[in-house]
Amino acid sequence: MAGKYAVTLLINYEHCKGCGLCVASCPLGLLAISENELNNRGFHPACLHDEDECIGCGNCFEMCPDFAISIEKVLKEKVSDGQNIDERQ
Image (cartoon, rainbow, N blue to C red; front, side):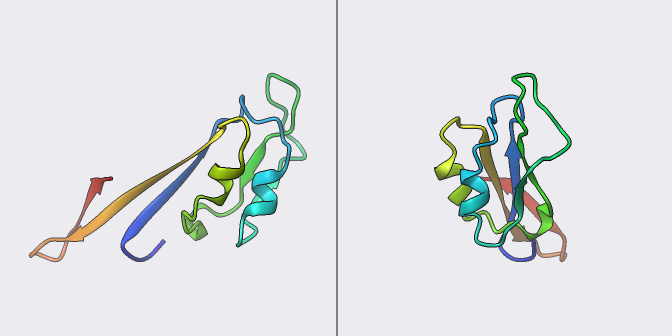
């Protein structure tokens, strides 16, 4: 993701029950329920199609009833020599 923040969306597949609430809440349609994978509880977990396109809006995090989703945002700051450094928020 270009811009001020880099976003990482993490899904704990073992906690996910595949309810689809996160899928319905994603404004970019980046989440889907896996058709081929099963977790240890026997559910098809949600998966992210394109991590680079995630804007970190938090809709999926807010909708997940099982707290299976977390979002990590890293603030990018420019330093004087033109390199990017990451600072955890």
